[in-house]
Length: 288
Image 1: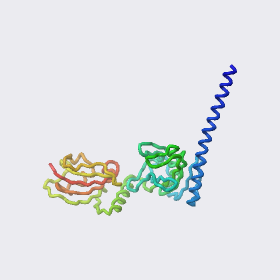
Image 2: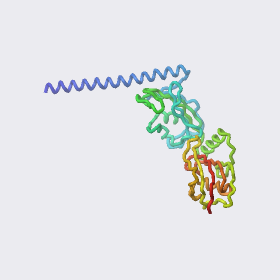
Image 3: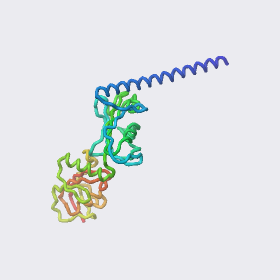
Image 4: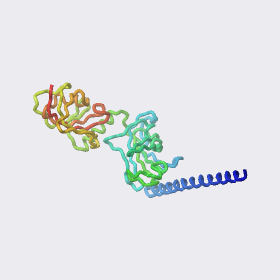
């Protein structure tokens, strides 16, 4: 019985030492993170508030209008940077993310999912049009493992610039993204009443008019507005019926091109697959 008691006391003492050691290690990382953040603030002449969970934030522009609730849709921007200024992840004005405010803490980077609660908490401080800066210590960011895929080392604190766009509707976002794309690339496009944009490069010389019931042999390449290629088929073997294709194709192709015709077509999300798309299209053959 005495031996059992001695063993129990020894186990309890060992457990206490282990817990203390773990807490000391955690506290040391927290202290190192905070010292690095304080040095960053001083060198950049920044004045930020420290939240109870350890992150720092500053509302740069509060925005206007009603307070945004967790159940409200928001379109927002973010830029993730290391303390040395290296950008590791950011949004683009050509592909603007949108979700409910309550889900803005969820990120997929590479093949991994992350929950960055401070991002949602700081975004919830903003109204539409607002901007803010956030600094997450490593234990609230990528932790001791970092993320080599985007060059984040072990125990690195992360600076996040955040913004909430004024938009409340998807069609407003589409218009902004498409107009930005056209201006950035110096394009000349005609705007259809459907809000699709097109440029007829060659109208074609075919005698069969295209209708929604036509079978068209077509070469095409489709890209997201940031230039990422989504799909291409340029070997003259793709021959669908027009009414099985994107709604935007059905609205624009009839009456504007025929066999031999070429055009560039930019579709808003409701006429594409849920996101604006940029097409190069060549009509090879029309069969009615």
